[in-house]
Image 1 (cartoon, rainbow, N blue to C red):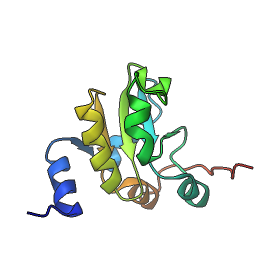
Image 2: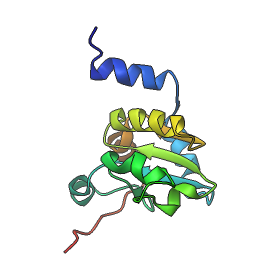
Image 3: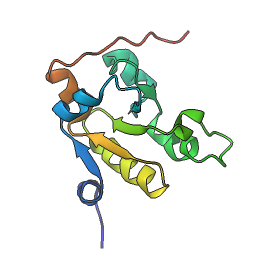
Length: 131
């Protein structure tokens, strides 16, 4: 039986914590929380990001989380709460489940992603194009 993307997202969302924009905004700027932007570099350069967010392209997440990976990023070893987001909340739902299953935590994601954040008038910052 085929499981499509929508079913995978629905299954993930049943097992993870999803934050409203209001709840995510309340956490933004807290020293014990890291916002993780899962979008690719082109999306960041085009649309901006949530101020201070750490960029981890979705395709690298598992490699950057795992301390035994040659690609591990120390940010994921910090004792913080991780708030994942993407453009609309689909990639971040799947990523949150993967991170949770890997033992990263606490971890959650933002309903509606960056699009909903921006539409709600929450702060954003430009991302400069890398040379």
